[in-house]
Image 1 (cartoon, helix red, strand yellow):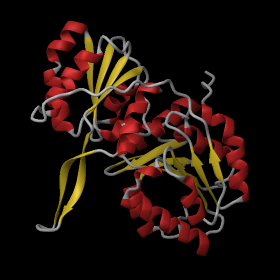
Image 2: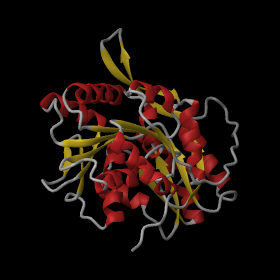
Image 3: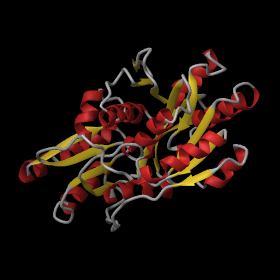
Amino acid sequence: MPQARLPIDDILPELCQALGRAAAVVLKAPTGAGKTTRVPPAVLHARLAGDRQVILLQPRRVAARAAADRIACERGWVLGQQVGYHVRLERRASPNTRILAVTDGVFVRWLQDDPFLERAGVVVFDEFHERRLDSDLGLAMVSRVQRELRPDLKIIVMSATLDPAPLAAYLGNCPIIESQGRSFPVDIRYSKFASSMPAPEQAARSVAEMLGESPGDLLVFLPGVREIRRTHQQLAACAAQHDLQVMELYGEMPLDQQQAVLEPCARRKVVLATNVAETSLTIEGITGVVDTGLARVLRRDPAHGVNRLEIERISRASADQRAGRAGR
């Protein structure tokens, strides 16, 4: 089956040519351009990795697994053979794997055991605008390995929203490639609820309101699994009335359940998700997004010397990313 053409396909030859001449490339491409699934195979087929692997870094486990699975589907490959993934407590790969999707946390631990990155020919940092400690540390270490020990190692940094100029300067004034996206206009509306109303109840009411305004499936962003479960309960009567398929999406779900959420559904679908659906994943059929504006974030408690998961308001950049899911 021929692949559907995506906006990123127009600049893949330019990207590969630039990476052939330079040690690194910064790619700016909007959400939905196709960079996650199309860039690694293009780099591999251009032989820019030599006999080594293309390593695709993802900020979350669900994104790493979904990216590997999508690449396998698009190419007619077997997941775990030509393309695979490695996340915490789970690995699906073989000696034949040429494209390996990993979380940035796993990648940093690799560097402790393999500081020369002998297995890697190209390292692709995806969704770099999220700016996690592990991704920043990983880029710094890979850049140093490249400068001092592995001049053959290639680096690609990809982002939808980050200003590419400072990154390109950090990577030796490397080339910047930009791709156009493909999206529909998004109408943003703000619901007014009492501040004391719990987020699950706000989300359920907003879903009921949006059902008559948006013709397709709905994506609901919630801060955590607890809120997802409560919203699911709140939507029980609405789902029965409108014949909705209410589905959950979060990082700890098994791969087959995650994949079921990403695939088309015979019934109208409402997906209750954490911020794992904010980037890297494409859920077909989404025409409306309900955003609570909240996320659970790991913070250090200096008074007690422990890390805590705290619910916080998201940034404007994250809000834009979430809203953009309705225009894909």
